[in-house]
Image 1 (cartoon, rainbow, N blue to C red):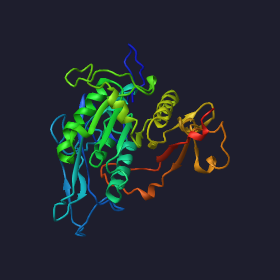
Image 2: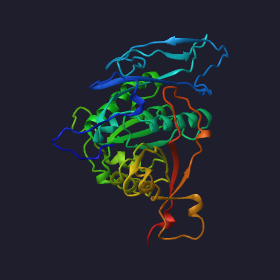
Image 3: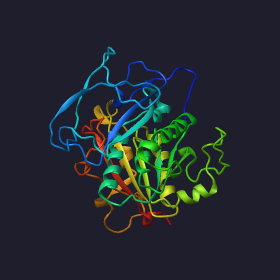
Image 4: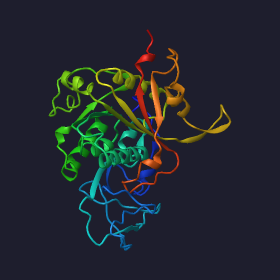
Length: 349
């Protein structure tokens, strides 16, 4: 999600850890292929369903177009061979997930990159879709969708999903990823609506005349879109917590969304990023305490209603209960998923 800022000076570039295997100093949009199946990865990171134990070295190329496999190179640009398990029999439920993305970006365009929290949230969606009917036929909204990765895996089972973010460059890239993946993931492109949602304007967004042939009108909301979105029962957001100002805007939008129409639940994934704070003279996770101030946990929520408590109630999901399906990332210890619900009894009268 962009921060809406800008300036004449060249902006500092940031890079997701997920992109460390991409060609160094690559400019423009890159294409990486991720993969998953209905069988989660084992402790070693392999999905060796036939127990063969056989392995081979896989080296593949990548570029800015087509449907290539991901490539790994070291900091000198030399190819790194990736040792993966290769089953004797081809997995019939193997699915490639092809994502076009930037390798680096300015802070206002971080939505062009793939972040670990999005891969974790995609794993959560895959686990629910493989083991339950929780998301079958749902209408959902991905808030600050970035590359659209979470919405793409959800589209396999959802009735309708609104992929939302801000900025034509990010939204154009989302739409490109929808086109790239619809055939391989076997979903109808009409399932996904790519729309602009500027948190500074909150909810509902301005109504316009949607015209897919006009770039300036391609991502506008119609009155019917807004009505359908308010019937959504699930919201998703990944790696949107990195600026206190944006966190304020995000929760303002989310609370208005969750208090409109059908009852909704938000699944939010984040990665805690640590830096030294001069104010606290300690290493702290930037913005995390501010994020946590927007909702109470279920334990804190207990007891009589209190008008001063947050309107949102959250529960942290145990990641041990969310197997890894997508091969091409390492979770680490700083990722979290929160399940957050709206608590209307705490609204001020």
